[in-house]
Length: 373
Image (tube, rainbow, N blue to C red; front, side):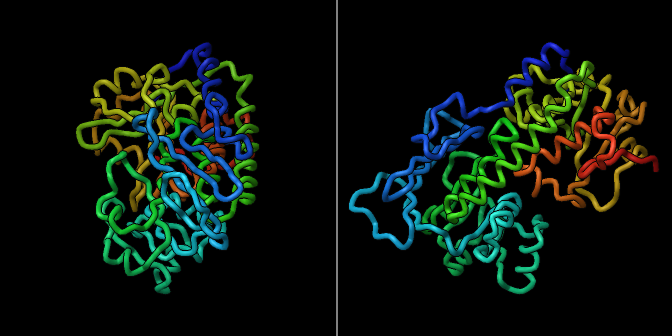
């Protein structure tokens, strides 16, 4: 992930990270979706209709949910869709991200199962696993269906990687709450999905409050860089195997970097997600970048010597020579649990790194300046 943007291009792209939802009609107006482009809500007297757009084919719908309060009788006529009686009382969460969101919504007791617990650092989940209140149902892509049926959840929160069926889980009859928040191209668009999730737990007021707080904080940090005249260039991550996965110019990270007053080497790229490049292609475009930011998950801290030992050509980057590398060890900090719902936290880190004078008293939350070994 790298960026190189002249100030004029930056100014134009800066505007693209705004209220995505204003472009498209959202529900019937009594549940306005302001930033997210992936879901809409329509309220009626007897039920609430929630539609999730297929992010892989936006002309289609991924899923429609019909939410009916558990204490009400079912209406005689309901639209086609997955019927969910709300609030959900027993759920399985497939990802660490959504465990973090459920924690914020105050529905910890409702979580009876998770997938891939080894990757979940949310305290209430780990405590529940130790006490036997929460069960691990296996891999997110192929959960233990027998264990799922045994737990008898009334919903499973999933994060599908495509619009293909979710394996054998589809046949259990357990409603899947499909969260494709990670496909949103903007930070606030993704964060707004907490409002989507809250609908299934009758926690809408809390979610609205949490999201409003995030928006306010994000916009305040973003405003700090509006008068910035120089935007430092940035390269992100490192290669895995033979490929270096680069975030596109229209991606979530691309938007965050623009909002932080950085010039991304791939800002003019039209990809909304990541795409693979060779080391040579990355170096050609990002070798002269002012800063280099790397995320990793390891027991030991990554330093300059260690980085060079992994792949000697890394030392040819200008940011390596100038000691302008910052790292984030996701095994130590709650990056993946927090950033999706609080992108303002990451935005602050970026602003502190690129324009430290704007946040003189702020201490980095996720990133650290890479140390000499």
